[in-house]
Length: 397
Ligand code: PLP
Image (cartoon, rainbow, N blue to C red; front, side, top):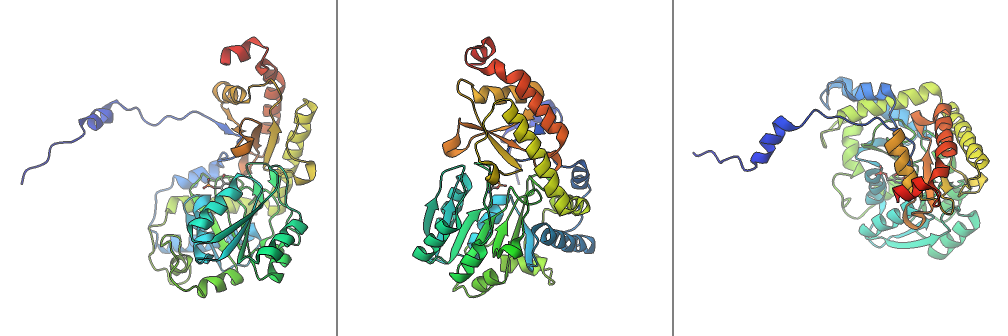
């Protein structure tokens, strides 16, 4: 038998020429990911063990219990999806939407639009209601839409990362119960950073990510489903149309049977186990207060510098602040300068807010007073050079 020739010799020359991985040091103060806690990074670097090893199986139970704590829920079906937040988002819809179901999506930013898109791919009849990007929904607006459309599911984003708005949750769960509607909540930018009380709020399904309030790198998507959503899953006519995200199959591995489903990303789960342990050690309420205090320091500092915040104070999200780019300032040039000269990442606007705002994240490990002060100093000292009339701004342009 002849051996085929090496098809891509360029790869072999790369093998000798490429230097070992080198990455710049960054302070991630954008919309996510946020810097991971060094304790979490240590956990990720441990040698993998088998995904059915008794030690790993014990860790799985710990992760589930800690997630229930972080979300304030007793939901049995609580587990980290292998994938990012979008995988967990998709899992909530894949498991509960049946062709023709009406799904009402309350869109107040970019991630509401993603929910609507995903629901339509599972055959839902998607209805949307919208409010301006920078505002939240009133209970009255939601009630009117529920009355009109009688949806199977209401999907809404708690912490809209594209706008910096935190949706007030009081009363929405009760409304949904009265209308026979399941409540689906995106907690990607709130879990671990902002008060979340899934059971008290009557939330039936929720998802999140590992890379923001939990101080872990991206790679896992916490997912949870309560009894009313489980009943909808149990009564569906056919199979869940997504094998990888089918929670009834996944629960045979995460539940007591421990049946192989896919090879779990064990190191990511070491990491989230440590991230959640650190959150529990600090205490949820302490963590929420820390995020609030540091955000308030940032807000007052920015306002002192004459900058305008995009969201009214009562709706402002402590984990993500949106700042209007002043007239005459090249916002993109300033954020590139922060990255290139100071190793600090801040985000730009998404969707209809592109070019109009900066997005500053203070999430998990990064929600610290020294980070706030460092960033405020840079805004004070270096932003003036980026007004359109100055030589630096002209040079960058
Ligand atoms: N939902 C919200 C509110 C988000 O901010 C994000 C990402 O930032 C997502 C969903 C998607 O999560 P991921 O990028 O981890 O897939």
